[in-house]
Length: 435
Image (cartoon, rainbow, N blue to C red):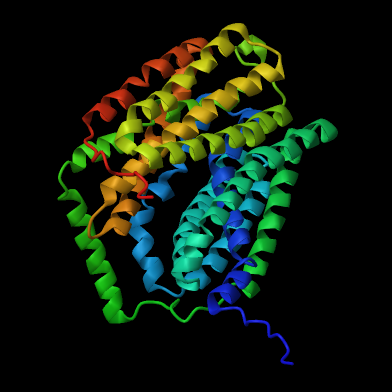
C-alpha cells in the first residue's frame, strides 16, 4: 500500500510564510514616527508649556517632508537599494527620537527638539517611499493583495501605540515623577529604544530580492526624465485645477481642528478647556478615537463599493464636516464625564473616517491614466499641503478668538469643503464593485 504524501507548499505559500516575519513589523514601524511627529508632539509641547499658536505653526511645518516627498522619490530609486534605505532611515528615526529625549530636560528644548522632529519627519517620509517600493519588489502580486489588510491593521496598531499607549505612559510618568520634561524624555527614550530594535530586526530579517537594486546610469536618467514627463502630464490633465482645489480644501476645517482638539482637552477649565490629564487624552484619542476612525473608514469603503463614489460623495462630505460641531457644546458646557467626551470624539472620528473614504477614492479617480502611480504620489503631496497650511494658522486663530468662538469658526470653515465638492465631476460607475 502506498503511503500518502504531503504536498509541498507552493512558492507563493513559502513566500507568504516568510513575509509574516517582516511585513507586520515594517508597517508598524512606518506608522510610529508619523504619529509622533503629527499627534504626540502636539500633546507633549502643550504639557511643556508651549503656546497654542507656536504648537500649531511649528508642528504644521513638520508636514513639509510629506508635501515634497514626490519630488525626491526618484532618488530613492537611483541611490542604493530600497532595503538599504529602510534600514538607514530606521536608524536615523531612532536617533532622532533619542535626540528629542535628550533635549527635552535642557534649556532651549523647544528649538532643539523641533530640529530632531524635523530629522524624524524627513527620515519617515523617505522610509515611506522605500517601504512601499520594497513591498512591491519583495513579494509577488498575489501576496501583495493578500497582505494589504495586514499592512493596514499594523499601521492602525502603530497609531494606537503612538497616540494612545505612549501618551498614557507619559501621563503616568508625569504623575509618578512630578517632572514633566523628565516624564516625556523617558517616554521618547523608550520609543527610541523600541525603534532601534525594529532597525536591528529588519537589518537581518528583510529579504534580499533580486529586483531590489539601484538604477543604472542610463536607467537613472530615464527615471528622472520620466518623473519630469509625468509631472508635466499631470498638469496637462483636464480639470486638474479643480482636482487640486478639492485636495487642498476638502479637509480645510479638519486640518485646523486636529491641531487644537487635544490642547482644548488639556487646557484647564478656567482657560476654556476641559482640564483632562495626559493619560485621559491618550485614551480618548489613541484608543476610542482610532477605533471609531477605523470603523468609519471600513463602512465608507463598503458602501462606496456598492453604489460608487458619486452616489456617496455628498453624504461623505457631510460626514467629514458636520461632526466637527461636537466640540462647540463641549466648549460651552465643559462636561467632566469621560463617557460624554469619549462619545463626542467617537462621533467626530467616525465621521472623519467615513468622509475620508471619498477623499481617498477621488485621489485614485483623479490619478487614473498612463502615469497613475506617479500622479497619485503627486496628489498625496497636495494632500499634505492641504493639512499643513490651515494647521499653521489654527493656533493663532484660537488664541485670538478663544475656544468657543474658534469652534464656531471651525463650522464656518466647513464651507470650502462643500464648495469644492460641488465642482468635481465623477463617473457614476467609478468605485462600484464588479461582483
